[in-house]
Image (tube, rainbow, N blue to C red; front, top):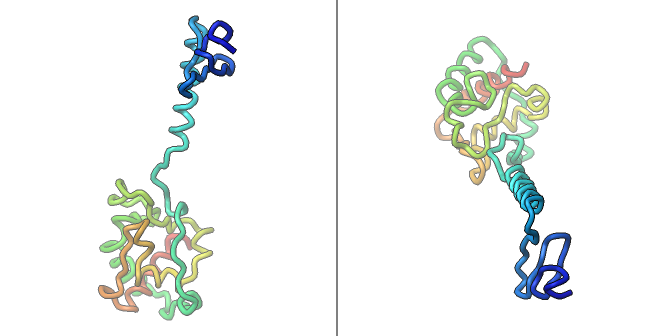
Length: 174
């Protein structure tokens, strides 16, 4: 197909798109309708790129590390008492609420620039799938350092304090 047939410099023509000898693809056409087609195509491609562009995600967008089996089978050894819940609340307010939110929804004041948002403790369906030992292990050792800011508290909190936090976290989705 020559220049006169397709408007290309001896290249290939695909319905108004032309590949020249150097492999460059360009839009063919000279009328206003052709310009509108090109603009529509451009906006369509831009829309697809913007929709597919990675956006900050929530905790469900990542795989939380799984605790070792010995932790997964652990039950909280502390009874749920008003004193234990009050201790858990105090610890949570001081150490967790900035990220996990004062009501446990994962929308704390420090999450604005985080790529992966903290766990939403108010999601009852999700929380029912997480064993006490898994929560304890994450509080103790932290979460995935490659995707989250969650650090462990093993050196800062006693086991009793971490277990009281587990009870308090559970209170967001009774």
